[in-house]
Image (cartoon, rainbow, N blue to C red; front, side, top):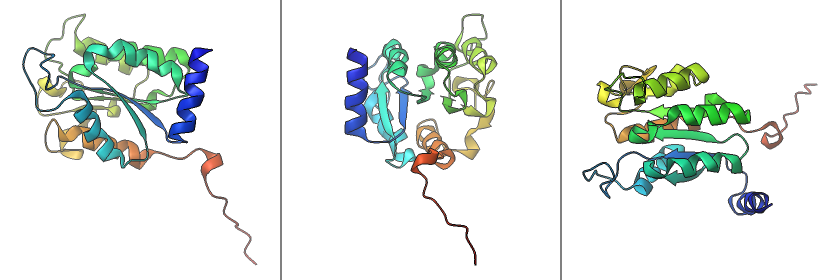
Length: 193
């Protein structure tokens, strides 16, 4: 009941904007042992910029990926964007979406750290997500295995100039592929004559 009330309130406040659940990468707070350029929320802002403001982005730090997994239950068929270190549990996200009947075409794995190819590695988890049904072209890779080159179906030269611009780039990809639900599209009168 609590989740239903939460869902209704969110819909009232946020309108009909499609939801994007975003799991950020390593951040300014030093969650990966050193401090990076952006906080998790600032990374979410880079994604929002690419999306153009027509989406409701819910951001989680990679260390809180489990909260992002739970958040999927609060929305009908959300987009899921995992970035850098946030891609570590990509197989859990694809499995959750698949079990829930979500559209795996709406999941994006952006520049994962796939240097190790061991059985329990990010590399293995990304490949598992693709096996679950995430389109390989939704796996965006940079210029090395540190940014997913060895698992990618789409490469940086088609969406951004560096690791951080990949967030803006994936936002643009989603925005340009988004089709409003039929009930939101305007009717066109084709009666000629």
